Image (cartoon, rainbow, N blue to C red; front, side, top):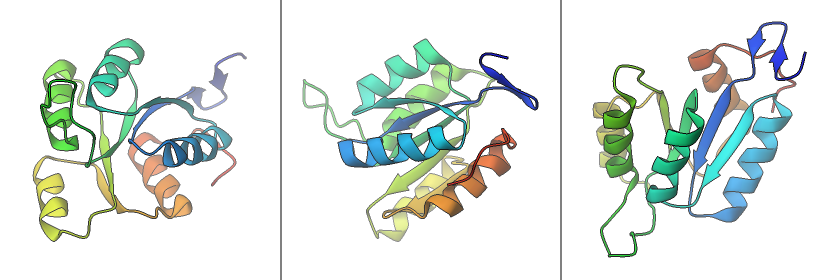
Length: 142
């Protein structure tokens, strides 16, 4: 039953964050919960990974490093690009941020983010939301 569980195919999650420790931690926790995980450190990598892997869900940091040309690739700009590439599929995007600015959460919800989490992330709560958005793959839990 390679690549599938009794409940269906393995769900793919793209995690986008410029902090390698957060990428590794989230990847390990999500893989333990039976998700297939892809990562990206910046906006350009995120768009490329989303095009290549067609994730079922994206976890996106808002504060990302600028592109080589100095163009600000924050999570909102990446969301906009992904929405254009995604067309009618509407991959759900969950925002994760270390910022306490209430305007960021407001903007994330206006941009139709599926959910919003402050860092440090409560992995149990995150998994609960992911399962709600995607449906449970029958994982082990975070």
